[in-house]
Length: 189
Image 1 (cartoon, rainbow, N blue to C red):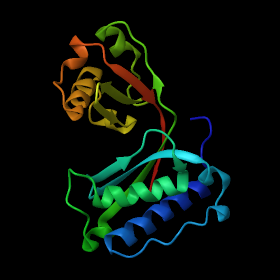
Image 2 (cartoon, rainbow, N blue to C red):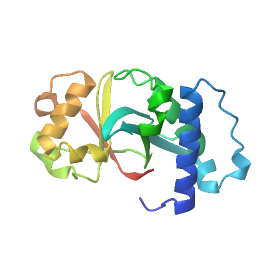
Image 3 (cartoon, rainbow, N blue to C red):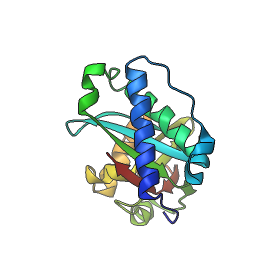
Image 4 (spheres, helix red, strand yellow):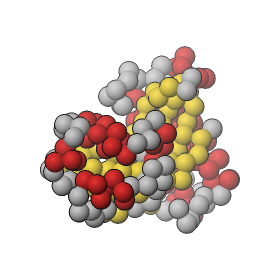
């Protein structure tokens, strides 16, 4: 990513995410965001994923691939959604808050990845760098670049991503599907 956030902007986004998480879990009203008081990077449209972990284990992760709202508001919305609406987990409870850690991933715009064959696709992926989105009709799923840490082999990465999408894990080997890649600026508490 060419346009990195400053350390102060990162700290402010983490603070906004923590406030949104706290308010949502405690069923408090989230105060409105005064965008005019924020740095320009945080006022500009941005896409993010907010990942929550508890004792090193995933506790929720929700985000958006393309910018729609100001980055600061996008982060707040996804902090709330990761805590309360990730279908893989029950909602975060107030007593869990001290153990929850927040990670924010700010995304670049996704770009189509053209490839000729399954082998070509494997060679064009950049483990540890690219986030990957697969699309096949109405099915879609994405893995952030951080997932490469757990699935470092491109074949396994694509197979697990197909399964996440709700299709057979080997679909990418037998059918040409739409592939997009993006990068992230990742930071955490």
